[in-house]
Length: 203
Image (cartoon, rainbow, N blue to C red; front, side, top):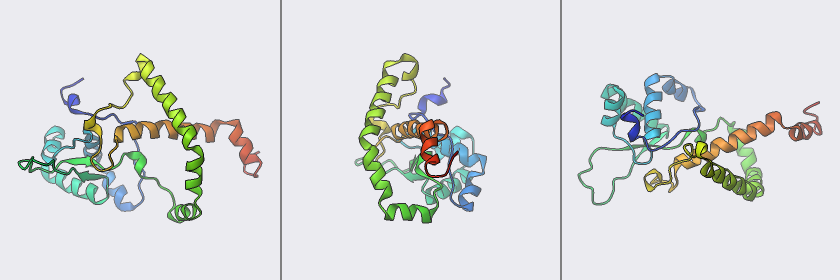
């Protein structure tokens, strides 16, 4: 592990950023934007200053500042609140607002319809207990097996977001497990194929 790697507090489990506008696509099309965003994510909830980003990634300060401004406007990042009693802390520190799972390319009209009808709330309510049990079992497996333990999110206070009070790293870990499980169920399971067939969507 290089010296630079020791400063990273968070692992990443998902690698894509779904976008919902040409503006987002344009900003994320730049390699420097990806590098900056990836770096901020890996630093974790402690955040990082623009100067640190510029130095560590060898990107001109002007590019870093303009990129951070756009990422903040699009709500990919936010500035970390200064701690009480640390009046000398002048530089803003940037934290990833949300990981890749926080932005979905769901059609807005469809999303409004299913939320209005309470469909998502009903599904969430019905799967909540089973999902929590499945995640508990998954965490137990990762904790028990030496070869998997390195993939676990780091359980420390430094990785807890000041805004939401949760570890983004741990949330992304769970999202990665759940998204892969859902993908496997929808694309590979015979039970789901039969479910579709009963409704005329499969042979």
